[in-house]
Amino acid sequence: MKNIVSVQNIVKTYNMRDGIVYALNDVSFSINKGDFVSITGPSGSGKTTLLLALSGLIRPTSGEIIFENQHLENAPDKKLAEFRKKHVGFVMQNFSLIPYMSAIQNVMIPLGLNGHSSAEQQALSSAVLEMVGLENRQNHFPRELSAGQQQRVAIARALVNKPTIIFADEPTGNLDPSLSTEILEFLQKINKELNITIMMVTHSPQAANYGNVKITLDEGKLINQNLN
Image 1 (tube, helix red, strand yellow):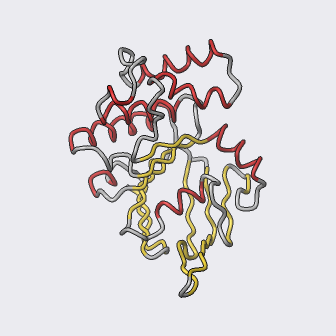
Image 2 (image 1 turned 60 degrees about the horizontal axis):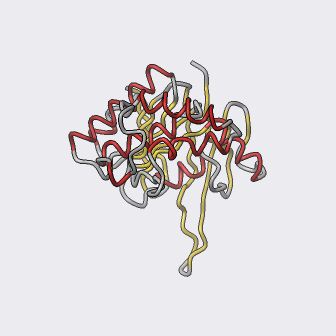
């Protein structure tokens, strides 16, 4: 298995009024290409901070984050932006869709940022919406879609640039149990069929079971890493 992410002794601190707070405290682990990683732990344990650091949206205070032999921890902003455009897809709890844009227009956004022509944007976005079962909802606005359909649009947007890795932060947090299962099974399908690595933060033990690698954080420290 090819190693895709290596995290070595990363620390993230914040200077607060009453002292230094450790959001991440000496966290180390490695992930292989094609892994489905679930990251669990109580609120405030550092789960979202870890995703933000791995995606280059925040810098660790110390330690190393290596993605396919590329160091991210001290990379310049431009290099980190290129890394995200080329390699990363995001799926968020609140879907993060632009309300005045149709489903296909929302999916097209990353392609526009990457310089695809209008025709390419339309064709690629239409194909990925069909992949997630929304070929008949392409021109619907978010308010005209169910919560599950909105999250599938968000997944399509994350997929459209053919990312190496998808970071999912509580992707089922706003969904009922049946829709949660639908979205989790779809993420698992993407992981297995497209060999896209997924790192998913979740509070749900049921959701965590979809991962073949389980990372548990508590008070910023990694307290467990299990392989299924």
